[in-house]
Image 1 (cartoon, rainbow, N blue to C red):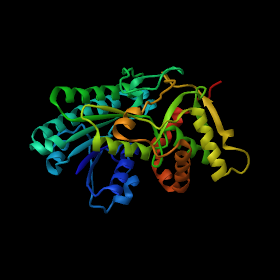
Image 2 (cartoon, one colour):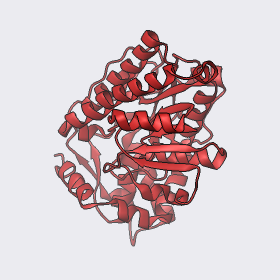
Image 3 (tube, one colour):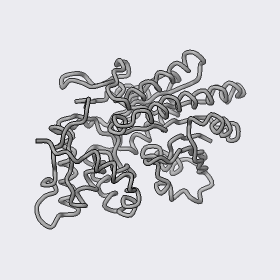
Image 4 (cartoon, rainbow, N blue to C red):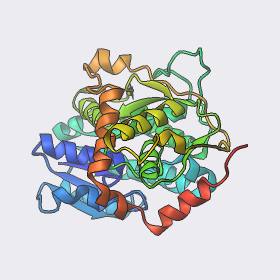
Length: 354
C-alpha cells in the first residue's frame, strides 16, 4: 500500500493512473479537491478496489494519522500543493498554508508513524517530496542548467513556499532520520492538465476562437517534461533512490514559451484546421507578470547515472500526444471549466501589451 497526496491533481492523478496500470499494489489517494483537483480524471478507477479515495487536507493531522494507522502504507508520495505562480501572486496565503504548513503536518504524522514501525517496515519506508525546478530561481542564457547542488533562490510566493517545504523535508531527514527523497521537476505537460497552464490554455483558447495570451515577449525559457515520463521517474526514485538524496527530473527540452505556443498552433492547424488561416493569428502578447523568471533548465544527469532513468518522449512526440488528447476529450475540458476558472482566466489575461 502507498499513500499518495494530491492524487486528483494533474501530476498526482497521472501518477495514480500509471501506478495502477503497472502495479497491483493499492493506493490510498488523499486530495482536498480544490479547483485543480478533478475526480473525473480518476473515473476509470471508480470501481477499482485498489484505489481508495479520501477527500481531505494534508494539514489535517488527525485525518492523516488515522489513514497511516489504518492502511499502514510503505510510502508517502506528496504531490499535494498549490502550484500556479499567478495564483500565488494574487493569493499567497493559500500557498503558505498548503505548501508549508500542510507539508509540515504531513511530515510530522509520517515521522510518528514511521517511528513506531517494526524494524523491517521502518527500514523500507519512504517519504517522497515532489517539488519543482522553480525553487532554484532564474538562469541567465549562458548559465549551466540547474543541478541538485544549486542554491535555492525562489522568486515567487509559489516557489518560496515549495522551497520552504523542501527545507522541512531535508530537516526531517537530518534531524529525525526520516527516509526522505526529493524530486525537482521541469515544467510538466500532458493529459488532464488544468487549463490555466500554458499548453492546455493555448489549446482550449485556440479551439474556442479566443486570443492566445503570451506574457511579455514570450522568450521565457522552460524545460518541458511529459507528465508520464515524470511519473516513471518518481516510480524509479521510490524504487531505488537513496534516502536523503535529491533527484532533478527534466525532459531535455529547453524552449521559449512562444515556440511552445507556435508548436501547439501548428499541430492544431494540422489536426483541427480553422476555417481559414492559422491559429497563430490568435496570439496576443500581454503585460508580463511580476517577477517572471526568465529561464529554467534541468540537469538530469544524476538520475540517469544513478538510477538509469531517462524520458521516453521527445517534445515532438509528447506535444502531439497532448494536443490529440485534448481534441479527443472535449467533455472533460468542458466540465473542468467551472465558473470560478473562467473568472480567473478573465481577470488574468485581459490587458494587452502595447
